[in-house]
Length: 477
Image (tube, rainbow, N blue to C red; front, side, top):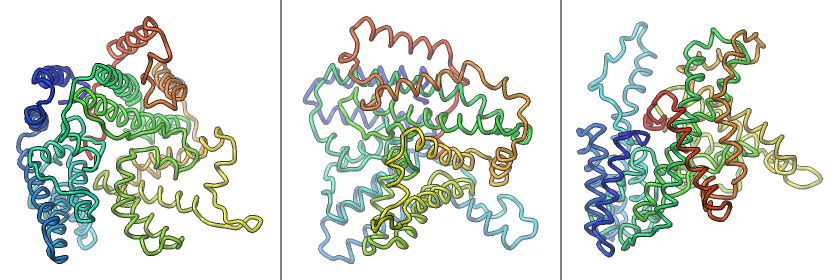
């Protein structure tokens, strides 16, 4: 059930009306409805994976209770490892087993047969990487005594399966989301307005911008050897905006949908194309994932070596490689992560100027924003070539052709009115860059007539100029 489908719209209206029809101060009935709606929503994708979702929830729920109640440090660690091994084991079995087996066999076999050593061949459960990370962080935080273990199974099941963010985030922490299921929710007209506006903006980014831009990107990346330098450069730049509008569009719809039910989800994007550096980019892009790896991977590695650049660099390479691998079991994603690690480590190299310790990041903050944006965009766009390419060889072919100044005979045919949607997006987000999103608190900016003109204009664009309907890119992760 895609967010950009009529089915989801109908589903959302029905659940919304039933939810508030239960009345205020009806927390448990509301939670039961949300749980049923969430499992129905997930079951529409593939009902067979509902058991996996429930199993992950139950194991982490009971493991956390045992972690909290155990007086023995050994017992606490044992239950923590039960949670971690289950979640990482499920991820490995469904997402990475084939990748590692294929590459291992290729090392020792001259003519390997694909899938020769697979004991199963299944699709990856949608949202697997998101909800396993969410439940793992819960177990770790209980072990670290940052939060108390939930005593309510209903609230915990809702926390894991909350349908607005179940399949593609944001990756919520228990400290933030779980208490919201404990509170009484009262209908708030302003929240509903804000939720609908954010959903509208998310649909515009996905349907009008991302799906239209995808037409050009898909055509060029399908056969990069047929296109020249300018065309490949153009497609690579467009892909950055495609994946941004696709994923941040989903996040906006998820956050807006949660608002309709009285919940607040974490902000996941903050205009990443205005970053001054690659380091800053990762503070603005998929923020909840970056913070997850910073807290549970990078932080523990450098805990005893916070002043060591070498240890920080080692931790950075491990973290960014894992972030790349998190996206999928492909060498292109690993190369994407390693590329990020290399550029960020270079930006952080310490050197002395007039007796003061400085770095490239500090230098970039002192030069005009336009120049630093060009710098960071060029590097991120290059890394996105690895992210989008079908394999490593294709990625290097594209980079080589871009750097070889090969004429682009069909380039003028590729530039059409669709790129205007990207320009509209940039203007709207830059103009309102200090707001949560461009339609936030329009009452303070425009009179009612202008506001409704904006709404109808966006709705017209969504209806009149939809691109080919595509699944959200991050559903595959």
